[in-house]
Amino acid sequence: MKREALPIERPAVPTIAEGAYSRIRKDIIFGILPPGRRLKLEKLKKDYGASVSTLREILNRLSSEMLVVAEGQRGFEVAPVSPENLREVADLRLLLEGHAIEQSFAVGGVEWEGRVVAAHHKLAGLERLISEGDNSKVELWKRYDWEFHQSLISACGSNVLIDTHASIFDQYLRYQLIALSFRGEIAAAEHLALRDCALAKDAAKAREVLARHILGGVEHALDGGLKLRDGSPESILRES
Image (cartoon, rainbow, N blue to C red):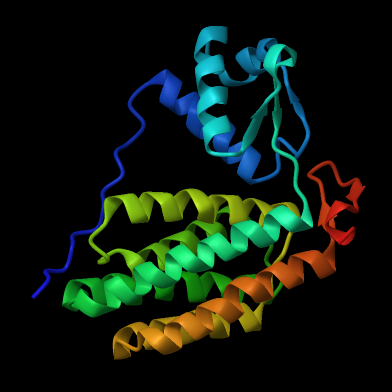
C-alpha cells in the first residue's frame, strides 16, 4: 500500500538573485509587468537591485518557464497573451491537476485531509469578502487559491508532478489576474465541491468539477476581456 507523501516544503528565498527572480516573476504574473513589455536591463537593475549579469540569468530562467520571450540580440520581453495560449495552458493544467488528484486521493490520509480543509477554510473566507466588494486582497486571494489546489494534490507522491503543475498553474493565474477575472459564488461553490470530493475520496467527481472550474475560468476571462494595470483597455482576449 502506498504511503501518503509529505507536502513539499518550498525553501525561503536565500539570496539577492533569488529575491529579484521572485519579484520579477510575481510582477509578470500579476500584470505589473504587462504582456509585451520590453524588459530593459538597466531599468530592471534599478527597480530590482540586481546586476545586469544576474538579470540575464533570471530572464533566461523565466524564458524557460514561458513567462518571458528571449529575442536574441534584441533582448527580452514579457510573454504575450492570446486566447489560443490561454486554452492550451488551461488544458495542460486540467491534465496535470486531474492526474495528480487521482494519485493524491488514493493515498491521502488524515493529515492530508487536514491540509485540504484548512486551505479551503482560508480561501472560502476571502472569497466571501471579495464577493461583498472588498477588492483590496487580490494577491492574498490568489495565494489562498494556489494553496487550496496545491493541498488537493499534495499527497500525489511526485515532486516533478507538483512542480510542473505549479508552473502551469502560474501561467493560468497570469491570465486571470490580467483579466481581473473573479467568478464569485460560482468559483466558491466549485471549491467547496472539490473539498467535499477530497473528503469523500471521489476522484472521478473531482475531475468533473475541476473541468468546470478551469474551463469556466477560461470562458469568464475571455468574455470579460483583458485590462492592463495602467487601466488601458486591451482587446486581445476578445479576438478569438
